[in-house]
Length: 338
Length: 114
Image (cartoon, rainbow over all chains, first blue to last red; front, top):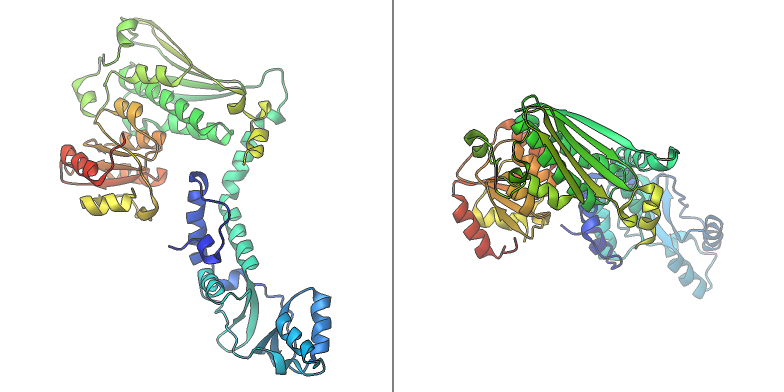
């Protein structure tokens, strides 16, 4: 598929990983959007009998560089600044527009996808195309600017919902003033509920991203919470609770259950050690790597367990100033970097 | 390497909704049936080769931002797992071949980063 940049024949910003997904969506839009949807229908057309002198005034008045020529609603030609210059050089300003206009006009079909017009622009090097319906009637004009605007509007519509959510969430720490603001998320995890395994961690990761967390930090939290979540599902008697406290400077995650407890915490922390049953192992759990993974992902981990009573696992990630939430200027930093 | 190349060269069946796989770049691979090992070793945009086909593989892939899971030996994920994968935009691919053969072919194709 040809990209917008290629079609426009321009080399500007290079495509980074981050905007690669958007580009694909933009390309999709170039095929989805119809010319009719993005064209300008408020068009300034002129009569073929208008003189070139009046046309010059017309251009000056409307601050444009060309216009379609219409006779009884039908497009008969197009006249531009270049045609005006030709008439000027021949000292022929009293001639009618019809003498200098281009008659073989390249037009666009209102029901074609926008990409068609982009191809025409790139092939012909024209800057604008009249959009003509099947009956020959002029319906509008389309320029590259119209396309860009149309695509941007469509993209905006697409992302508006998520953007609004992200915006609201990311301003949380700034809008709510207190000596110490934190957001607490709680998830009840049911024992043996493999169907919903990983759901809480996915939601936590999404929440962090909406709050404006650095994606790497969100990923580390996601992995740590996932392992804790699966431990609650696999090893507990009645399931447990995941609690995540988000503060501008740190994220504190806690998994608590009421049993059975870990008899030997040091052994449990050893890589490869697992008490998971054969059935659980067949599903791919019980590698004995869960707690090891958590330790790798967080800055501080504390495991506290009493056999017969339960287990409390505390995990903490400290946010560096550049990774911190809005209160510490995360967004301002983001904007400055190119 | 794009997912399309991998799908074509290995003759994989796409279980999830088709996407524009020729624009999905992947740079690394990982093979294991132990989810925690994948959690530790799987890389962003990577391909994961496994025999596991239950719903949790999607959760793991989503948390790691993997691009695709190749499920070997014709293990069949249930419709719920496929729906979850579509929702999270994780591509599920299937093959009758065992993991060993799949990894060998990926290596031959030049996918060597792990």
